[in-house]
Length: 195
Image 1 (tube, rainbow, N blue to C red):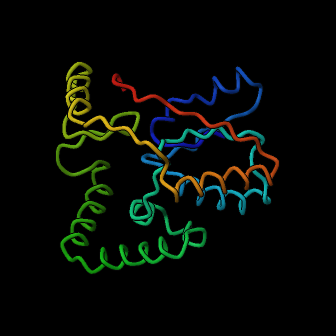
Image 2 (image 1 turned 30 degrees about the vertical axis):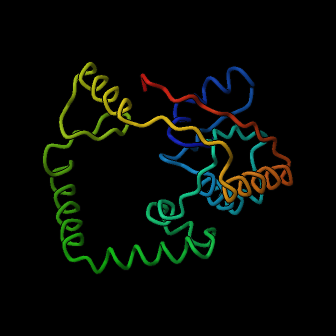
């Protein structure tokens, strides 16, 4: 099982299987943080008779960031029982705020009806085969140039030490995995300028 953020999307289950002989599945999440992996792992335990895979390949981003707001906003409510109390509170709050936002609700209904009727998003959105959504169909060269420009605008930074909450969750995760007979391999993916 491979876990991680979008940087781990490149981990090919077929290649992992070919090189190790183990069956493999990539369960990486866009912007996935250690708290997301923790929640999904607890959900997986309930779905698989309290068992985890033999080997967990965990792509981790130093300094082990935790983003409860992101988790609360984007995790399906099926995961609600596995969230900590603060993330649960935020998940409920965000859903209630969304229901009370008349403009957002109206836009959601419009988008739902439009998609059912026409099979695509309203407007000029293009959904690529890998799930990437753009406002128009870019050529490969245009997309590469736009990504390079955007990456160049990100300021470089260096963390001197891990975020304590993230480090604690990572240690707890490794302990949980070992308790269930799993080996955890930590992987630090490089930032890919050509990604």
